[in-house]
Image 1: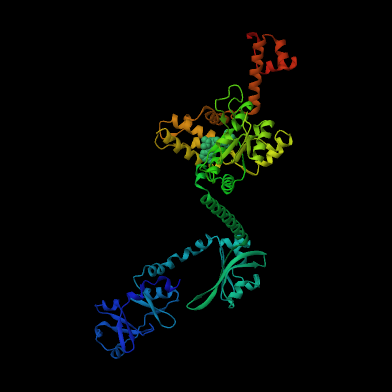
Image 2: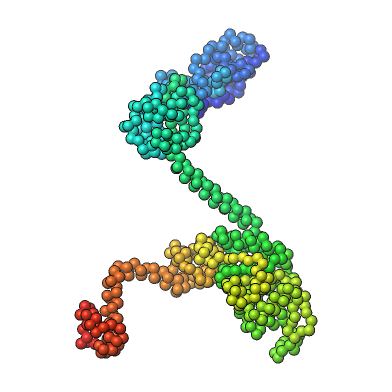
Length: 581
Ligand SMILES: Nc1ncnc2c1ncn2[C@@H]1O[C@H](COP(=O)(O)OP(=O)(O)OP(=O)(O)O)[C@@H](O)[C@H]1O
């Protein structure tokens, strides 16, 4: 430790008189320094010239007179000196201050005998007996050689990393153990080594080392080498790289989050694959591209379609949804294209506009598009190609300017191969496919979604803040969520309505989730018995029941599908008394 590291009196705090150009200036500290004692004298460069007794000095004393009053300052120490030099000075009973100067004698500051670090350092010798324990606790290997090149110390980590017991090398010359050792080179004047990869040739181990000489009273005493196994470092740097990749990924995530238009705020989730889908959707939203959203029921396809619409130039025009699976085949055409008055019996007066017409300048969302009949597929293809519709019973065509977003849960590719879905329509609709992952593939989002829906439904049902118990959260995390986010949303609403406290517990869950939990609890009880024990129990139970059901042995043997001999053996084994049957 260097003196500069423990200096406690700064230059400004010292009473200084500066001599310059035949004049002198007292610094602020010196002007307030009214009591007896010494004022330090420096030249115009700040070099320490000596000290003057305060009583011999006042503002009016001419500069040339001051020089004759200067006495030498003995208590100085170099800025870069080892702090222990200073400690020994104070330990000798000296009180007061030691002035710190640099190589050019420029005054830098001072250390007072009240300095806390000085007092601590003066006690360090008390700790000296523990130094071996401290070094052995270190993760880095330490080896020390003295100025003759003799190995005087190695710690535990050294033995572990190098694999040589301390007893085999202590007291030996480094020259004999490792003639090419860097420690020897540093001892002979090679510059200190900092974080360098070094090969310990005698054992073929690569280490990352710091090797430095050490001095006492300015005299070289030896060299200390501190190193760690390079493989550890490689592992650490791999780890670091991984962390960097994660950080980069999160950074991109955040960036992409920032980039997502406001309409996407309705889609809650941070899962990587989910966010990637959103980023793609947000990118294509402002274009007029035809988008197909793929994913299981309840994953948020409609919500995403709406977000795309709301982030497009069509946002001030309608967003019309058509569920192609929910509308009977016979009605789908009139739903989509509308009809003229009198088109068929039962047709409304004045006719009816179709969804395409209603969506004029906006977006039509064709949900479950994979459920369309081949005839409807042909009609839809025509609308996409011609951008025109023909109303049922109508003679004219109507031009439509509508963006199409479709969605399906079906495996359209297989349907195309099996000729169940038109290939040309597939390519028209599937221009930009966006896949939304099912909830079971993004379970990391469950806590976030739970929180979101809790807030939503507590507000809707005028309830205070609620949380879910950890047991409930565990059930949620284990459940496979076949109904995806829709199911989770419903479960939370169900629980919020039933819960009258501030914590949702298992009793507020729908029965099937409660059962999932019950199954889990039962399992360990079952497992108290071994499989053969359970099989025997079941066998006895089945034989007894079959006997009771048929009332006679021959029918029971037939129903059980076993031989007469096996049957009697089992009766004996399980001590089944047939006289009661
Ligand atoms: N990421 C999400 N954040 C918040 N709510 C969501 C999210 N995804 C879906 N939801 C909600 O879940 C419910 C189901 O979503 P949506 O109707 O969009 O799913 P879908 O995939 O279109 O389902 P289906 O195929 O059955 O029509 C909706 O109430 C929706 O608001």
